[in-house]
Image (cartoon, rainbow, N blue to C red):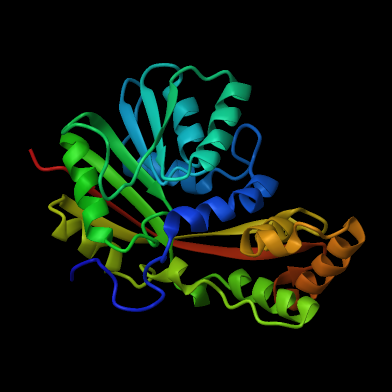
Length: 283
């Protein structure tokens, strides 16, 4: 296994532009302070054994998940460096920590396949839903190992298969019904979704004591929650930017109809399934 991908959906052709173009969509649904759902964040904190006093690197940090939660978890003792290639996304993370008055946080724009940090300078590395996208996934994991201090842990969380996460399909179906055209799910999100794919990368990159597990929970979304609006805005941000509130109401009704199989009375029960792997940098 090389970690470089083997198909057209296994890398983004222009990743920096891709994420820059999606900043508005992410901004529409991003928290303006603490995370609205920190389930993934807490799992990464546990898997990477983060405790107060550590210097932590969060890769593909985007708008600040899990780095904002980690900064709060450190309780002022230790630091978090949020690293992402898209500065506009990092600006959202910075705004969140400013609102929370967290002083132990910094942002760095950089490529996780060639990190701008010296060897052995961090006590833990995390990455939430970012490793699926780069062309050279192995280089990204190897760079994380390089910047970790010996005996420290790195943890990665990636989406499981699309069949495990049906709302990616129901949202796409709702968008198709409303706009009358196809918006295929971005299968690159699931490029490491098969059991063993993620742990194999960590092992090949030189991590020791590698573990991987299926991480699943159910998110309860009340009718009228902004969950589906955020999903649509992140999927086709430019297309929905000009929608009126009446348009949005009609679109969300269509998406909810497409998601009817997940509805239970006044709530939607959303399966959320990921793969979570961790490893220790060699001593």
